[in-house]
Amino acid sequence: MGRVQLNLDRAGRQSEGGPADVAVAGGGPAAASMHLAAEEVQLLQRRADILSAGDRALVMMYLEKGSCFSDIARVAGLNEANVARRIHKLIGRLLDGKYITCLRHRTVLGKLNLAIAKDRLIEGLSVRQIAAKRRTTVYRVRRGLLKIRLLLDGRLKTEDD
Image 1 (tube, rainbow, N blue to C red):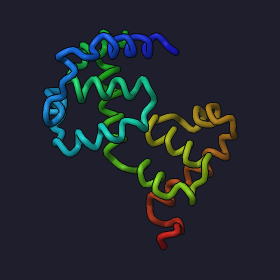
Image 2: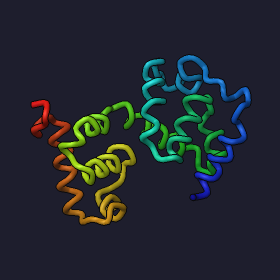
Image 3: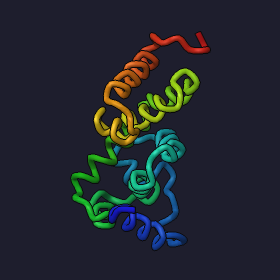
Image 4: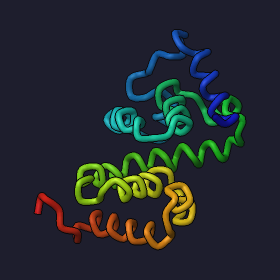
């Protein structure tokens, strides 16, 4: 477990049961600053389980506790601009629904391609990073990404067709 994850875990444990744990209807001040509707905040909270533990902690601190980027950056031990960029990218990736589409068609994609989809569409990893993480070839990752792209474009045969 990395330094950032340890700091985020400690921050989560320290605030448990405190008054800051109360979620404001509509997602708190942080959600208002991004112009997120209450439905989008609820959708993000449901989809946050897809994220890794560290990313989930960042997003939940932002959505539920209404923490500002500077507070989250201080707790995580990161630069404020990096935290803001990461949170905005994660929220965008969760709201676009591409990975959810892949989950709905998991039988067509298979286990490895579904993992590749998560690595690319949620975590934003490069082809080489995915290949190293999944211990496969760059060619296999590219082939999987092509299949994912065809699925998302509606050009891949599924059971629904």
